[in-house]
Length: 439
Ligand code: GDP
Ligand code: IMO
Ligand code: MG
View (cartoon, protein in one colour):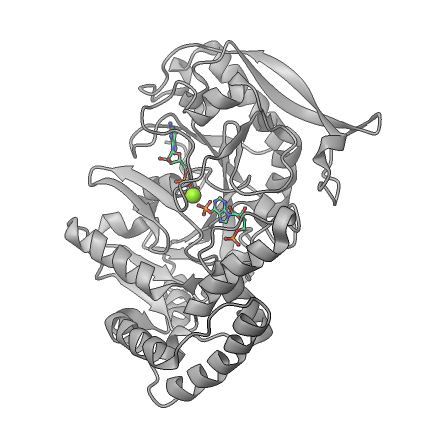
């Protein structure tokens, strides 16, 4: 059986957690393969509402192996709180496994994340401040500390001392911050290590064996393709290595790329972004404010960040960027989310091209930094002004909503197999399962 990757097609927060929670039923293993605690995936199902940063969204089924793969960077404090929160709410976490190769977010990463942003001043990226970016920087610089290191009582003391000496020189010399203390960090991380030890294993072999046995593996992407280091709106991107795009999925759990046969692109029915950087279709008017407050869709789903609580920037669906990310990921199936959040609009706009220096362009310029030079060219479609959150069959959607969905499908050049009309697991119109079977 193939592995399937679920990725975000925009700037994150497309509803990946929600889509994984729905489709995990068909799989035996669900794995996070990149990013860190900067991710925030919201899940609403019969167990309640959950915000997960590290634990895969497949955890609610109880019988699925949930993997935090080698491509993830882990803040042990946040992971342990997440496990505790799930257990206290009756969710079985005994099938969670954590890669011994995953890198660890250390206290200096959080300090540097915040200090770097201060230094950037008006060019700040608007990071989540979780230390995720700096942990990836250290991984690439080959001075990262991995989960297996923390568990190794022979190696960890010396390794910690060496890295801390170096980091303290940076923290005090470059940023003027107070040096961090070895004893406190050693004690805290050794305790974290002992608590995590039962979950830590060689997840790479386990994933490879599962693939060999023909089991279905679902790879849960984090962030969105436009935040990807190589393909996104650089430098306003995240630092994940491997990439958050579909190609990173294989690397991040240690299987070959040929195992991935299907790629599900999750797209919100409009555009949002948290943090700074270009966003050609951003709205600063009352339509934007209405999208921020949930657009007349399901109550309690206004657009505030799951990780930081920041208001998300909002705008109309950007068909140019969406088509770009559909191709970038080789999307075979689309999950379109938050269709209900457009219910309040008389007229809905889709950006189909940009005007750049009087020319019409339909591809992504490498530098979008000055996106004020890009003028979106919109197509206007009529709204449906009707609650769609209880619709479960495509034919029962209002004709104007069906027209909107079809237009997006054309722009993405990939079939929309799932339309999410509310945040709850069951609030979806599904025409094909993600493995291509009609249902
Ligand atoms: P992720 O990071 O891609 O998993 O997305 P987030 O969880 O950060 O943000 C998605 C937000 O949209 C969450 O508040 C979800 O509960 C909500 N959501 C997901 N699908 C739908 C939908 O179809 N309708 C509405 N109204 N909300 C949705
Ligand atoms: P999920 O998985 C939305 C954004 C940050 C910032 C930039 C860099 O929930 O979709 P970082 O802390 O990664 O160095 O910040 O990336 N960002 C996200 N935005 N959803 C996410 O994840 C994000 N992860 C990072 O807001 O603009
Ligand atoms: Mg999110």
